[in-house]
Amino acid sequence: DRVGISSIEDLGYETEMRCIYVEDEEHLYVTNDYIVTHNTLHASALAVGYALSGLNVVYYALEELTPRMVHRFVKNIIGTVIQVMKNQGDTNISKDFVRTISSIEGTQKLLSEGDLTNFLGILRNNGMEIGNLYLLKYPPYTMTVADLQYSMTDLTVNQVINLDVMVIDYPDLMSYDI
Image 1 (cartoon, helix red, strand yellow):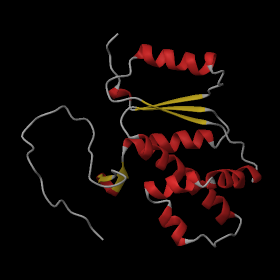
Image 2: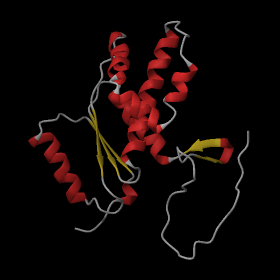
Image 3: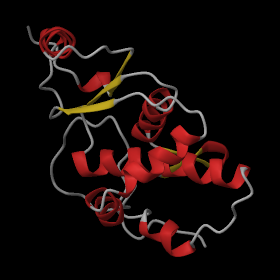
Image 4: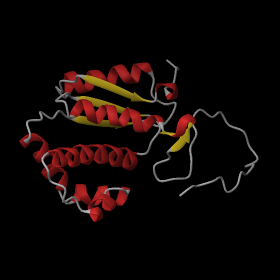
C-alpha cells in the first residue's frame, strides 16, 4: 500500500513553521531512506523506556495534545509487554487487541477499564522495576525557562517527587520571554 499526496492547497496566509504535520492519526511521515519519523514519537519512546527502567520521568509536551501523548505512552508500554510475552513463548496475542490499541479511543478504553495496571503487573512479574511518568502540557511558545524552573521546584520540593529524567518535547517551542 502506498499513499501519495492528494492535493496541495494555498491557505492564503503565511506562518512560521518548524515541523511537518501530516493528516494521519499518528502524524508520522517518511523521510530519506524510508525512515518513518516524528519528533514526538522518539521523545515519547525514550520517556517510556526510562520509566520502564525504573526511573521517574517528567515529560513536558509543548506541541502534541494530551490524548495523543497518552496514546503514544500506552502503545509503547503495551509494545514492551507484547515483547516480554513473545520472549516467554506466548504467541496468543489477539489481533483485535492490537487493532484496539492502535487508536486513541482504544487506548482510552484500555485506561478506563484499568487494564494498563494488569499490563504493568506483567512487567513487574518479569523483574522490571517501573518508575513513574508525569505528563505536563503547555501550549507552544508559552513555557519559559522560569516556568520550567518553577515546575521542577514544585514537583521535587512541594510535591516531593524524586525525578531522574526530564524530557522536553520540543524545546524549540519554548518562549524566550523572561
